[in-house]
Image 1: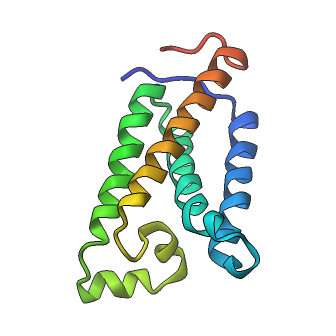
Image 2: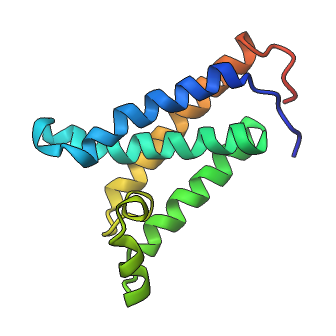
Length: 135
């Protein structure tokens, strides 16, 4: 796994935009279209996971794809289980945002599409903003 230099001044605002677009789906869903509430939160959450791995660990784009997909899929699978301690953790809003509540196959699709878009954006940024990237 090679490390990749990503421009903090590019990636931090990008992460901020993703958060700003995703939070309303969870905080004020009654003001948004149903399709946005149903799919955008998961789509954007997966993008956020990808970019956090990319920025914090400086993984290659390919490695970020694999690690972000594994993270998203494992968290989604964890929603099939409801031990008291895990449901208690999910009752805390922040952990509820991260861990979710109920398994949906459509979430796996949203995660896959979000990570795919994030990987495309990452590849584009690395090849325009950070041309000397280590791939």
